[in-house]
Image (cartoon, rainbow, N blue to C red; front, top):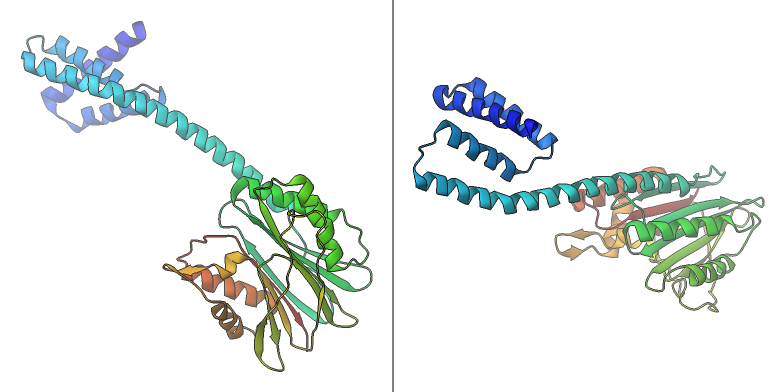
Length: 336
């Protein structure tokens, strides 16, 4: 009660000073009073109530209509104050959740990190940028003892925390496979069983796995419903779609996958991507696949890493720097 009395007296002094002098000092003190009230989580209707009490003590003979108008303002502010308190509570929860998601995103980045290998005879570029804090795309490189390079690209159909958790499971499942050479079809069949057992049926996971043999320069690959990539023939200076059929992971435990082989000549490139690349939009229009290959062609003289970054920046600008989906691209080029 003494605190309320002090607040009332302090406010009454401020109000009297301003009414009599209307100077800037009184307004400054009123501003400080307001900040203090916010810090103490005092709602607007309480301040209005203090204002009314101060007015009644300073001017006890105020006209009845003025008193009535102040009471009307008080009732209005009661509803406003309740809504304001609810807003503040929700805002605090949102800030707490954002902080937790930020920590989770940093953890995910660490968990999903992969090292781009340095290998004689090939040039590798990779970029993966999430549309939001959490990434629903995944890529991974595996270099075995026989000189082969495994490349995995996966995409969870969905966004946010559930997709990120699913992708973390995919990563650790990939790590559980032996380091010796495994054919792409066997990798996908193993991953299909993992997803079928552990992922909610409402979530879909697509995956592409390729294996480049540096001895034969053959690129062996299989796809589980993943976005088709491109193959660039340096001799023909032409891009082709990488056609590979296969059911998305987790639908049918017993499904088998077909394995394909593409021989790579000097200067040829394999371009792997997720649907965040092919589903870029300019205005209300989705881009055509030819537009992607045309952009890649503009930068094909650059190192593979520079190509991926230039393509990303091109489509980032095209979307006014607001990605609508996670963007992942990998380029593997056989050196001349």
